Image 1 (cartoon, helix red, strand yellow):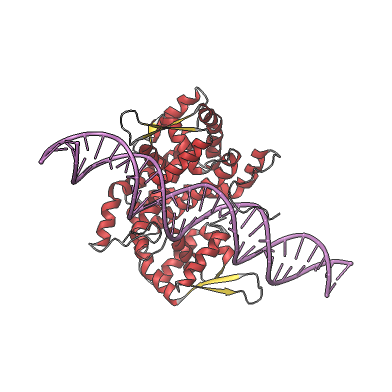
Image 2 (tube, helix red, strand yellow):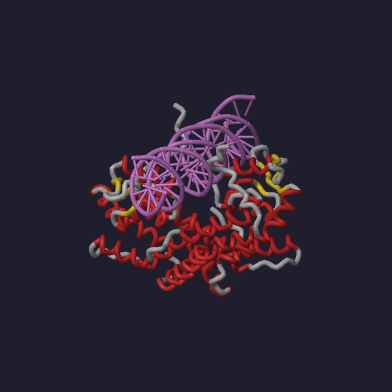
Length: 190
Length: 190
DNA sequence: GACTGGTCGTTCGGAGCCAAATTGTACGGA
DNA sequence: TCCGTACAATTTGGCTCCGAACGACCAGTC
């Protein structure tokens, strides 16, 4: 498990490494812990309630989105679930093959695909969600309701900051330079 | 981008779906936002400072851990970086092949491997870390220092809760039943 | 020395993931 | 009707990740 050596200690070492160049420690600690917590929570949930139903975090989130919002177009589902359209294609087909999800073409626009839960999927979520929520409660057991709300609100602001200004910021950083292609992924044809 | 439909609205829908079964909303919102924020932050950092040096989040974290803590045994690095031993094997070899990291067998125990940065790796981190920290500051720009500290502290409690009591909890949930094997992963030889 | 049990890192199978390229549908003008 | 553009999902390629199985190694015991 991560974090046995304290983060605050790490901050000091990092600062020493840089010999005087100042570091925003609070921001560093916040980001580091966001990621740690996300990984810990995901791992715990996959290894407790989800494993039993043979779901991963991603498949569960996709099911959850469709369950909550009802029949939806797939690009919206991808957006809500925080995954790319390409990933959703695979995930939704897996779920379809397991009889939990339906995929139908939009009645008036042949390009779009509508996702909805089957009765079986519906039943699964009704059973699973309370269990899931119980584990959410477990992992946050050291926080009061008020603290949970505070944290949720703070993190919402982080997400919003990136959504609203991230693109612009990245462009500014590049400063006109070439956007440096991703190492993985499909290569240009030529 | 995720989250255009509000989470609070989703909570109400989920509760309605369950027809009276109570949900811990604050805990649900906290967990959902932890994950959203982690994904958003990771994406922003990979697409800004890391992309230029052809690093992913994981490779950067591994470099960072070794940079901060100095030469370390690989199982400790995996633990600190929050990745599995298996993943670290691949990552550290990639970094070695790029001349950023050294891998040496432990002088007195032939099983262990010691990881350290090369001069080139050291130089890269000295250049990169301030840039990284600047983006950490960017994503948390809507939060005060005090709020960053509060959030970091709250999330630390979440991580600790899972680390300290997660295993026990998962065993209790299974209640003696078989641990339900993972779908993916290496199969027995037989 | 040969067992034995425990602890390393490594291997490997399957799922996930992104983003570019591609395919297919829609729709407004020539 | 035939284009061209726009926008939808899908395919594809490369990489990441976990975790079970595995093999190398260590220490203790007989």
